[in-house]
Image (cartoon, rainbow, N blue to C red; front, top):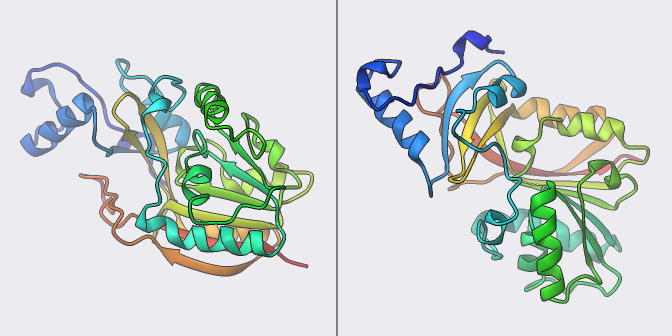
Length: 271
């Protein structure tokens, strides 16, 4: 784990001589990060998730909790990297599983995307857990799209207790609490866990910052083997695993920052 001394010191002065480190390339990238509005960028290395959060530039909002931005941030479509998870969600429905808990599912983007190709059963209950501003927009959208019979929202991950499928698509990296810690807190564990586009690293866990345009988020790139070991220790057995090729992630100017990648898996509760 990195020491806090490795954290970036953000200086927002326009004078290049006041930007550290002095490398012109790094200084240029830092300015691009600070001024970013549309790209998905990463910068810095920190000793913990909390230290990364404390390292967000003062001029930037922190996190996704923005009801207005939630209306346009993501498209409700199926991307090429969604297909492994789509397969396992479909298999879960075929196996009679009806309660899906979508951890960090934004405004229900995957619920809307997947229903185009999956025959959703009438008794499906898909619950999205996210931050309050996003949940507010998600509920409004569900009313507009007449999806409230199946799609619900909450802000407390403890409501995952007793669900059939805990689904996390591109969300684990934004959570201060690890999935292993979440599972340990649930009175009744989910029967199946489907993870997709989780930010992972082959050698260690790395904490960094992610600019999403309107805000900056602390971001955990978890040691891949640690993520899977946490599921095994929680009583799950692996059914499948994959790497989301073609979805880029890199933390420039950080040792090993070019080795990060996105991955997914499916685990079932043993017994």
